[in-house]
Amino acid sequence: MSIVAPHFKKMVFVLFFGLGMVAVQAQEVEWLSWDEASEMAKTDKNPKKIFIDVYTDWCGWCKKMDKDTFQNAEVAAYMKENFYMVKLDGEGKEPIEYKGKTYNFVPSGRKGYHEFAAALLQGKLSYPTTVFLDEELNMLSPVPGYQKPEPFLNIAKYFGDDIYKEKDWKSYSGQGE
Image (cartoon, rainbow, N blue to C red; front, side, top):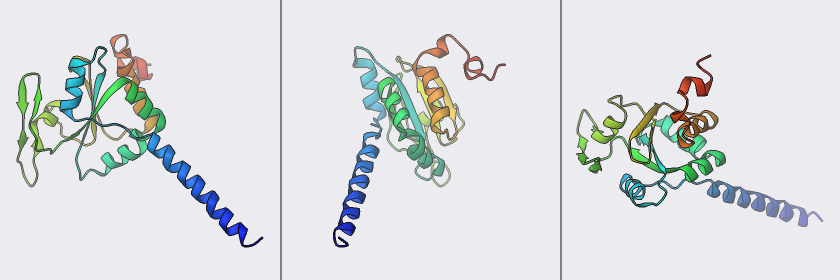
């Protein structure tokens, strides 16, 4: 009996660990490039809004938000259904076309910044910042800073469910009372 028990424990561990890996994989977010998302917004019969996660490689809070917020099952499911999701490196080097203008990387200091990130963040280069655009690629709002899953989902639903068309943020979030 003592020979079977360790094997059984190992099988149970592998089974649970394996199921855990499947659950984590099921929550993966499908990130698109800017070109892919903007093309889909133009060509899909029922286009979605665009969500942009502006990050940098060196940003610890960006990595934490990726892991804690964007990989949250409820957040990932809602975002996939309602938005084209774009990851934008605030220090990326590739030119980006937006509304007839080409935005480029600008060397500055040791690194530099991307003009498109600066335009989306309204000149306030702060990471992470998430940006919501409507179906016609018009800016709805940048949202600076790390967001935990529940507050983030509240913000995403404000734009994703078109609540912003009916209520201001303070009324919706209960801050206006």
